[in-house]
Image: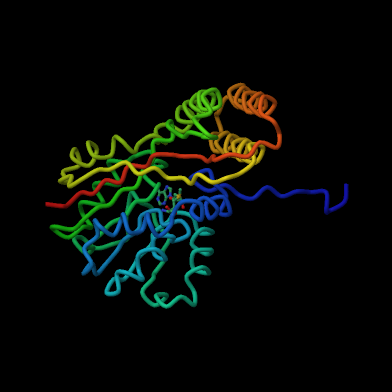
Length: 283
Ligand SMILES: C[S@@+](CC[C@H](N)C(=O)[O-])C[C@H]1O[C@@H](n2cnc3c(N)ncnc32)[C@H](O)[C@@H]1O
């Protein structure tokens, strides 16, 4: 075997994604519309933003051009993510207002009552001890400060092609249910539970709204189903204890859908996943 035959699999982070998968995912859905949606809940005079589980610091790029008086601290447990986030921030007009630091959501490296806004985008879904994180949120937020959580219900991940792909979606539901069990005590479907969890942690919930992430475009059915195969493979790779029979069944269902459709059929399709944007305030 020559050196070029050896394929090194990119490393998966705590969220089960490679950095490239995370970046591609954010390019796919975090657009100006979503940023405007978030900004409705963020006071324009916000001074400090703490992004818990910042990943590639996508939130800094989205929010700082509008929050012109704010500084941003991104915390992540993954050093490699932070290295890449730093490279993406360097040279931007707001780079001087961005700080990235290694740390855990369960023990935030911040003083008591020091922050106006805490953001958690797709992070709580990966955390085994969510109450521990929220106790830190309570400690670090100033009185009246806001928490904005953006968390999904991955059980409702669906594919469309000129209508819902019912059998494919049923197979994905089983796949994501297996992934959810494999990743417990974290919960990849935590989104709709976040308001109650925040209330139990002593925060006042201001609002919680589902937002459909995704994009429907005109494309060949074969391209959409290839994307579905990739999503199935990533979901399965994210769960070490996942059931490979469920993955095989999902892939076989996608193959049947591909065989049933004329290969050159073009229509409007895409993948949609609901996230719950929950806004809460510290008393
Ligand atoms: C799905 S990514 C989301 C990244 C970013 N918030 C975004 O929306 O683009 C989840 C991130 O949370 C980080 N993470 C997971 N558990 C963590 C923990 N307990 N403490 C700190 N970071 C954590 C992961 O390393 C990963 O970068």
